[in-house]
Length: 149
Image: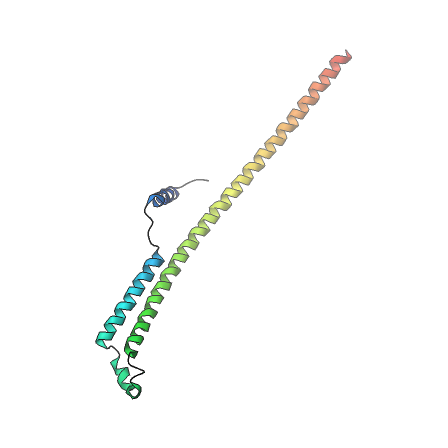
């Protein structure tokens, strides 16, 4: 299996990653950032009353709709955040799937090469065994011929 420069670089990078300090995964970082942004938006919307006009429209039941602007703002922010979160996970999945397909193809090539080498070795061993069998028969023939003389 011929190794190209990229494969060698990948192997070196993987080895250096093993020695590095363990870090948070991209998914964990995104989740933490999303939670922090949602809390920040909730706090800001509480102080600035972003959707106060909804509260005015539903003023008949003001007790039930006291925090509607904060809730709507937080939900919108969470939706946008989860969209970005999902999109990034999809990109990671796509990259990982491409790497897996590449590795699977390399594994298939290695298996084919191994099978071909085993076939060649088996063929050579059969030829060697046939040759040895013929030589043994020839030696036995000569020994029998010598005994008869």
